[in-house]
Image 1 (spheres, rainbow, N blue to C red):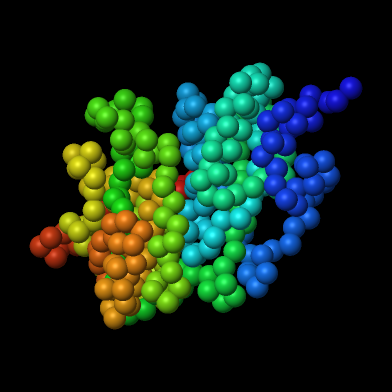
Image 2: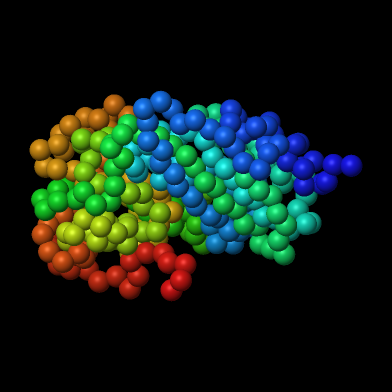
Length: 313
């Protein structure tokens, strides 16, 4: 008799398996990286009640799990390739949840050109806990890191900032969201693949834990300071009524935060236009001890009680 775990894998995950997965029938996958490319590997976890709501649809949970990881590849200028996923659920989880979860994985596999290599399924007293390890690839030496920002570089962001954090409030019924735009932005990030092009972008990371906090990460990695102009930070019309501090520090946007040299800014904007992606200059890096100063329209410094999300404080 086939154990229940293996039967579940066969029903829901084996149809997603790609080349190198060995049909999910062995202890590990065996893969050959694309010729002449370097691997880029990242992993992210999501926990019910922390990263997604208990009543969120399983397919949307799966797609958010993939997209938060694809966003890490986008920040390094990498091309998505394959992934492994670990799913830990209470024993009472119904088969329909797994069917929905697998359907969401399949949808975004097709969207981003991914295939499943393997993973693990376990039971837990709760809550549902998920982890995904993603593999991408870049040309040798062309992965974009956080440590390349230099004195005088412009600070740029893609899209709009604050939708994710405000979207969580909307999903909880604590902020008006008549068309569902904000809740959708929280539940379904849009990875900005292709924007971070080596040679145009000096440093990059995605905005997952809050714009100010993530900008601080680039400052520390690059050994520079940053001046962020709060009034220039782009916000969607739907989130315009939210507190500025929430938008600057709330996280969950998965937009890209990039450093661009002054002589590359026009080329960067032209490149973004080919992707039909809005980009906005919101400040400048400058020499100094690594820190972020947030300024208002009048040039005065703004103090924030919190700069971003942390799991341990």
